[in-house]
Image: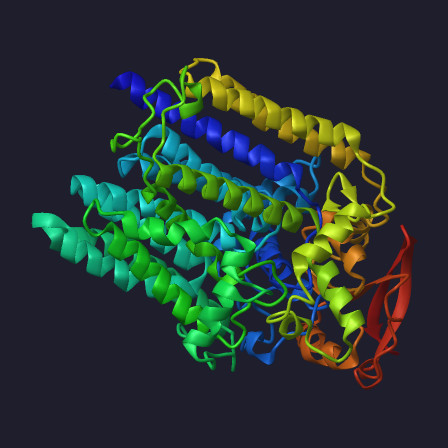
Amino acid sequence: MVYLVLVQRSLALALFAFVFAAYMVTYTRALDLNADAGTMFAVTESMVKFARTSIDQANNMQYVHPGVIGPDGSRYSKYGLGQSLAAVPFYAIGLIVPAFGLVDVTLLPNPLAGALSAAVLFVAALELGASRPRALAVALLYALCTSTWVYAKGFGSEPLSELGFAVACWGMAILLTRQEMRGAALAGFGVGLAILARSSVAVAAPVLLLVALRYGGPRRWRMTFAAAVPMIATVSVIAFYNWLRFGNPAQSGYGDESFTVAPWVGAWGMLFSPGHGLFIYAPIMIAAVPGLWMLRKPAGLRVWLIGTVLVVLLLHGAWWSWWGGWSYGPRLLVSMMPLLSIGLSGIQVVAKNGTRINADERGFYSFYPRFPRLSASSFVRLTGLGFLAGLSFLMQLLGALVSQNVFYWQVMATVPDVDPDVASLNTLEFFMPLTNLSEVLRGCLDVAWKPGVDSPFDYVGLLFVVSGLLIGAIGLGLAWRGGRAAGYLSALAVIGVALGMLAHYYQAEENPYRALGAAAEACAPPDALLLFGDDKAYRTRLVWQVNRSTRRIVGVSPDKGQMQMHALPHVYRALQTGQPIWYIQTEDSPPADLWGELEWLNLCSVEVLTDAGARLVEWTPCK
């Protein structure tokens, strides 16, 4: 028994290392600053550097709804706190250790969360009574055949929310099979983590509490309380965060965005539409539907899984933008992938004599000297599963290799004056995987090792990462056979990935803004208000990759209206307190005297320093 436990732990560790290395093969250094990811990244930067949650340094990234402007005139993120909070230690490491770029390191939580979710899902399936082959198959199908792979590339909150629900699966398995209190607490912690990452999934909390109360056994009230405590703590943290930003625990910053669609309309679109349908972008989930129904034991599991998926599906189906904006597949349904994947373990494999086939602890079915003779229905099931798995893997690979922005740009060029999201929802004329396939064939990849058609391959960095993947695969095989070296190989796989990142960062192009932060530190007074004007997305990404300055920098939009909305409140406060005002002007920035406000504010600009393609301009009262 002890041997089997050690083998299972070794397998979970090897599975984590293998999936993490696989995700890093399609890793990208790009951060979409004009979307949710850039805003959440800015929150992380503010928390680490300034111990604040305002994101004034991101004023020049995109248009900001007035609802995210706090009472103090600063800009705040409307998104959940979990993703930004999870990235804090990574950003801190990148800030302290110059060997890595800040964006490079801060993007790591998502592939790590995706790989960890696969390992936790493997353990949960074992806890539910699945054999090792079945549990490992569920984990690998989840990791490589669902949209988890695609969203592990970026900085969205989906992987962290998935990790929360994977932990909840593990906790519910313990609660329903062993009737243990720790299972209820673990399930509540998992759902709480998912809520911290994405507040809308809070509708899953009542389902968990009702199932714990109904199937919690003689101590069901204690079980329910144990599950409720971590979720209540999470909601309290979110309320406190809202109060810090907007002075109101119930104000999240979404303004007039609301649930204005009939739930069944959005639900149908998230399941079947060509633009964002779950069963189209992850066909393996077709098999999860009957698999969920086949889960007879433990009692209450099927109720929890189906109930949670349904309430989340219907809630997001009623959201005005149920397709989730510019995204690949059903973005607002990605957090449900662990629960749906558990359903795959319910599909039975039966021999011709009618007995259920389970591989023993030595290996997969294919490791046997003779493959067991399957019944006709089981052969059809396995063949269908194989086909759906292969198709799903291809869909995720296409999504991971190409940026979804390429698709939307092409739609806008083809159909001007039409929302590209709406145009792609219900017609196969605009089918993202086909666009991605054509982009792959012409070499337009969104991976760090070849970022673009004309960019050369970084063979050194890619070699290290692929080596890590191969070592991880060998470690997974050894762990399956009970080899003692599996743990060392798993660690070696992760080290290979880290070396690949290091090699790539050192071979990257020279950053023209590398000295900008140092120049601001050296020349501007410690209490100066620094304004940065550069709305070029790629340049801004470079700035954020190397910006180690601990000075608070406020972004300035080139649009006069945006300047008035976001930068002027800081200028006003600086003038009232006598704080020096400095403007960091690059070759693409608007001139420092562009805005007419400077005249009636009686400010004059004085050029102080020219360095690295940028000027530091001091705004001083005119004499």
